[in-house]
Image (cartoon, rainbow, N blue to C red; front, side):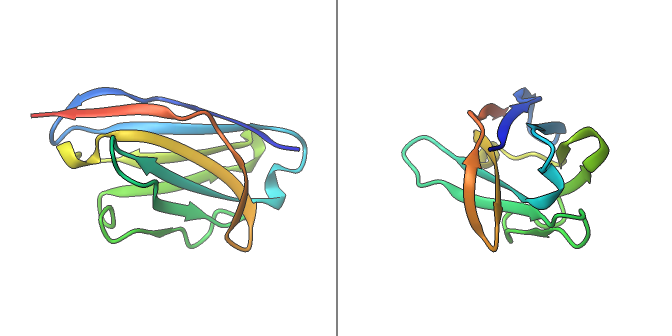
Length: 117
């Protein structure tokens, strides 16, 4: 069992930056890939990016590539989502999830990110 808690959301002006954290409980954290997802009002949840178990070679959705960066610290059971050059269309609830082979078994409660003009 893995429990995930996201933090770091908030209100930011367009062009600004935020760093989200996803902290996990449990000693098996390093066994899981961690994915970031987001859901805007009235829209389906969409994939943002993911980190492998080791943290190497993160991959991203085209909509955030070049602006968002995922990093991982297994010693702290934490994965980070650094978001730069934020746009109003990035406004959403952001979730992290843990899983293997792109099957996401565990989800956090989400953190709100609001980007204003």
